[in-house]
Structures are given as C-alpha cells and as structure tokens.
Image 1 (spheres, helix red, strand yellow):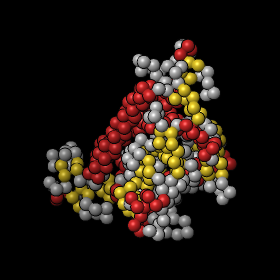
Image 2: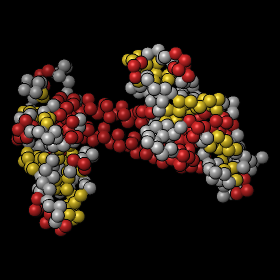
Image 3: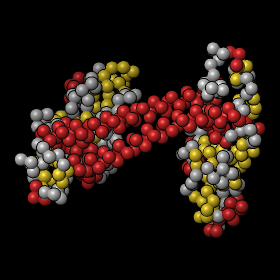
Image 4: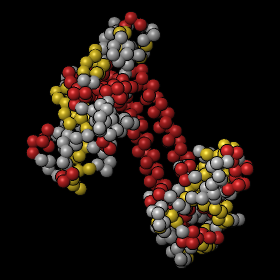
Length: 446
C-alpha cells in the first residue's frame, strides 16, 4: 500500500480535494444511462404480496445494501409509468427528500421492484463504472458533502434531478474500482452478518427471559421442563409455576417511593453530585448517570433517594403509549414525580425484579390509562394489584447468571460491530480518496 504523502506528484487537485492523477472526475449523468425518480400515487397499489416497493426506509446509512426486511409490496403497477421505475440489479438509489442522500444499490436477487417519488434512480453504465464503487463513493465523505452543499432550500427541502445528475464522482481505473468495492463489500458483509446475529440474540432473549422467569432453572442450571417433569410445578393465579416459588402482589416486593422536582428557581439546588432521574434518562437498563443533577440541599428539599440496586419505573408520560421504561440504579439516586422508585425487600434481588418488569412490560402497558389532560399514566393501585412469582434467592442468582452469560455475548458482538464500523470509516477515508492505494494500482510499481 502507498499513500499520497509518499508520492505527492501522483496526486492532483480537484473540486473534491486531492485525488490520484490516474483518476478521472466526472458527473453522475456522464456515467449513467438515465437519472429519474418514482411517481406519486402508489398507495392504492400497496399489497401484502407481489413486487417489492422500495422506500427511503429500505435505505440505510450503515451500508449500501438495501434493507429488505418487512418490505412493502405492490400490486401490478400502473402502465408505462410503473415500467419507467422498474429497478434492475446494480441500479443506484439516492433519497432526495426527507433524510437526504442515503444511498443503496439494487441487489441481484431483489426481483421485480419499484420506487416512489422520494428516491432518485440512477441507471449506471456498467461497462464504464462498477456500481458498487459508485455506491460506496456516494455514501462516503465526498458524496455526503456534495449533497449537503447542494441541498435545495425551499418550502420543502430536497434534491431535484438536475442536482443529482450534476453530482461529481471520482473514477479510478475500472479494475481498481472493482478491487476497492470488494474490500468495502467484505467489511460490509461482516458488519451485516454480525448485526443479524445481534438481532437474533435480542429476539431469543425475549423468549428466553420469559421462560427463565416462569419456569426457572434446576439445580443443574438447566431450564425446567413442565412437559417432562410436571411434578416440579404447581398451579397458581399465574398458571403453572415451579414448586417452592411464592406468589405475591407487587405492592409487597419492596418500598415504593415517590419522587419530586426541587424548585428550579433555587440555583443552589441544581448542578451538584446527586443524579436526578427523569423518564428521558431511562434509555439504559443499568443507570449510572443522568442529564441533570442535584445538590444535597436540592435533593433534601424536593425529592427522595434510593440506594444502588433499586428499580425505577415510569408511571406517567406519553412514552407509556408504547414503552414501559425500567432501569436499575447503579448508585444512590434521586428521581422526579413521573418515576416510581422501588427498594426491594429482603429476599428479592433488584436486578431480578428489574428483569421481571421488563419481561412483563406488555402486561404493564395493558393497565396504562389516560389522565384528563391526555397524558398517559399507570394508576398505582392497579400496579400494586399485579401478581409476581418469586423464586428463592439462590435461584434468582442462578437465573441472573444465565441472563448475564447471554448479555455478555450480546455485548461482545456489539463491541465487534463497533470496531468494524470504525475500521470501515478509516478504510473509506483512505480508499475512496486514493490517499492509500494498493500497489498494483498506484502506478509506482509500473
């Protein structure tokens, strides 16, 4: 590999910055058969089956592969207007409204597919350019910069087709385009494969969590099987549960505390070292920091503390229309009036209780009501009346150990994806600018 620093005379200035002298600069329209966009009026043709209908949601900034899960379908399109936007493998797609400049390449296996007016279709000359190279280039820094700069500012921001046609692309020799595209495709495939594994692990966790919290684990650490060993289970208000587990109402799982908001006009109450939890903070399972903090005086004047290992639940707010936030306090914390704090009683591990609430979030959302002013809320009496099945402390620990093993694998895979994304950013910066070139293409070896 060689760089621009090593061979400065082999680089030239261009509107896109320094590029190798062996590269050319051209406009998209010059390497395309045509540039067009989809039409309005597709909604009446939506269907549960049939040809694919590609929308902006099927494009992703993570890579140039289309996202085809949960894709919309259409009935047979309407005449010539539909045929004009029939996609072919290798077509370049760019979003031209809303979230501008997201790039996708139509894969070989997409089948019959169409687009709407929010996406530009660029049919490339495949003998002149590698479509994957063009896709990676337009998704890279130079492509994104052009789109931000050329974004039409009007009543509705967007890109028009003349603007898309005028976008500049740097063109290495075709063999070099192929080679760079293969390198970036390889890392994209690795990222996508790991992302799919992470999604599968998350889906598995939901069912796994339910089974652990209803069937438990035996002395060998194995999930109990009520079909093979019915003698290990008994009837309860919650259905069949393991022998030895107790049934109780949520009101008895610990001390339920209400929070509050100290006076905002008292400057001395805010900006101290006490984390103050609001629903907006509750986006992580284990909570150790918050957006706002209190001084000790502020905390004493208008709220309550809970110790580490306590649970926070959102009981008021519009988020309850679709989500039941649950967090575990990693440190001593205060909280506001839209949140309830639970200090678990002896015999209940806080982390176990937090997982139980997450596993039963659908049941919690089922008791959400609406206040007179429209805000979603959970009545505390309704919440307290819910039943929970509680294993002994040692089994709670065993259940948590199984969960933590699964969570560790999720964390490792997520870390791997993060590292690959960082690697990809560096590769794109080097390869798409020609700053680093493989020896067989850099001209130095000739």
